Length: 119
Image 1 (cartoon, one colour):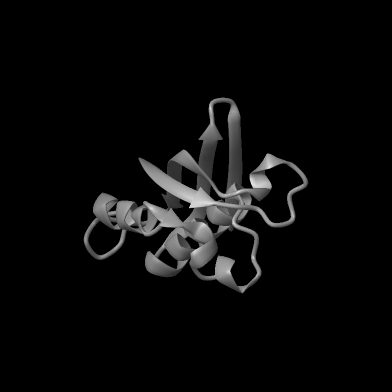
Image 2 (image 1 turned 60 degrees about the vertical axis):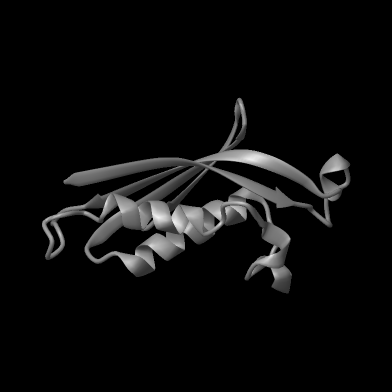
C-alpha cells in the first residue's frame, strides 16, 4: 500500500450565515490543509499522484472568500468540514487508482476536522 501526504497553508475568508456566534461575520483563517492519498498500485507515471497536482487542488481555495466559490455560493455552508469534503472529492476525481483520501483542515491550533473518503 502506498500513502502520499501533502501539506500546505492557505489563507481564506468566509462567514457562516447559520452560525449563532461571531463566525456569522466575515473573517479570515490561515488554514493548514493535509491531504493523504492511499493506493495499492501506482499510476502510469509510477506515482500515487504528483505532489504539485495535489498542491494545486489545495491552492484553488487560497486567498479566496469561500462564500463566493462553488458550491458555497449555492447554499452549501463554507465550513472547514465542507471544505475538507470538497478537497477529498476533487482528489478522488483527479487521480486514478486511489483507494482512500483523507483530508485534515486545521483552522486554529487545536481545532481540526478530518474527512475520509472511500477507505
